[in-house]
Image (cartoon, rainbow, N blue to C red; front, side, top):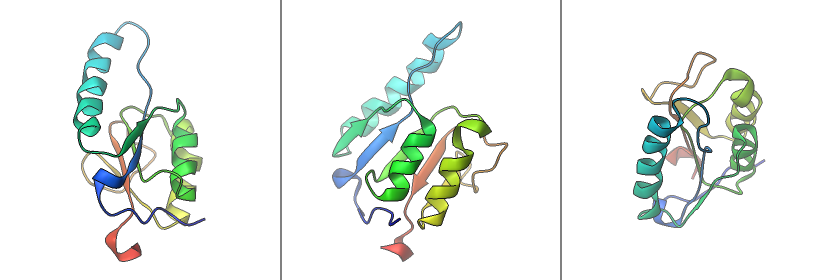
Length: 116
């Protein structure tokens, strides 16, 4: 596995988590729409595949360049995080700290410059 070598967001294929369902979906989706709109003007492409583990596996393969997941559970991300890290990708949470099993908000994934 070789992670992406894209350095600039304007050339990046970004995957973003899917929309929420249930009682609080409207408020959660408002944030997703804001993030999607911000990325749409800056990234080459945005994809919504509907599976955190697939998003992360594609990132590990270098088929996507950035992955943003706005809500996650450990069972949704653990295997994909492992694959991404094995490929040399840095996986951080919203605080900029290494993603862990307790991370629940934003999952920010990118290849460190040292790997480019």
